[in-house]
Length: 265
Length: 198
Image (cartoon, rainbow over all chains, first blue to last red; front, top):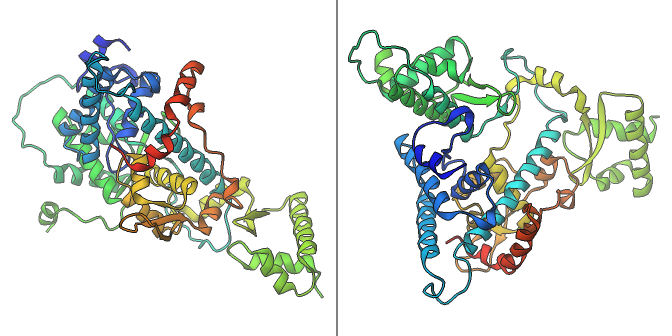
């Protein structure tokens, strides 16, 4: 957890899931969630946040999100500005800092604590939901289909990103020939994955990405994976926390990108 | 002639949602509320003691026959993917805020989550877990959201007081001294937190 380690890690990976960069997709969660994650990851006190360190980690994460070309919601940028403002105020000697005595971090601390209460409450609701789902009421339509499916746990973006990092950190195969390959487009990556999943509807995340060789291809494939998730064509899940990540074909009405339609025609 | 207990069981069997006590009393046209509750208790015990595949539960302010929890793997196997999907984390967070702070406006929910919750609220409305309670008197008369009766049923609780207690801010802290500081820090946080994120 020392500073130098964090300096060394910008968009690269760390051993065994102890990575210092986690990414959150704004559609699912927000900047407070990301901050809490960074704080908990380093086992820091919410009330005594090392603001410079957290700001750097936060910005690194935003940077990685940009590298992945994920949409960074406005709220994330507002929080980045807030962090930097706090950081600069912390640098001022107390006498120069404006009239109020309050720790510049106090507002943020309140927000984080309030948010963490409801994050905990959401977990409570999740438990109730899980328990209730074990009881069935009458009226469920009986229909046999999809004999393969087994209920899996929903998965967070954090885990998916971790999985991507693991895949990226693997040794790439030794170069035998160098062929200038056509760059893989997002549609093509999606098409390839769709094809594989149509053959075997449930695959491990690593299996799915192993077919993509270079780093850029893997990242493209990952973005395609996110797109398929968003469309609802696939689902990502795991059987247990830290368990292997399964990608499951959900099929359905996912629109085929124009490029592929032409190809099929 | 069937016994009243048989009729109660049949009524609950025939309904796919919780049946309120008042409905039962009205339909039975005989036993009063106390007597009916006693019958329900007896029926609940009968089902449990004889090890049946269904149980009688008090839920969402009514009574309902539900499958025994241990049987869920088999029902799952029969129903497959026909089940409604679970709520997403964003959905659960938003629902938690609405449940504990209702009635509440979208702006207040956004401020606690630090992120726009429009999509999540929309999903909750669509799934009938939340509803619009009315309009706030605040500027712009924003809509006020609350949980629905289906929310209780979805979570398997009888009423809102059955929700787990919301943890106080201080208890989140591990370090006692820091927690002490925090209590001073957060006095008045209620006001600040509902005013909106910076």
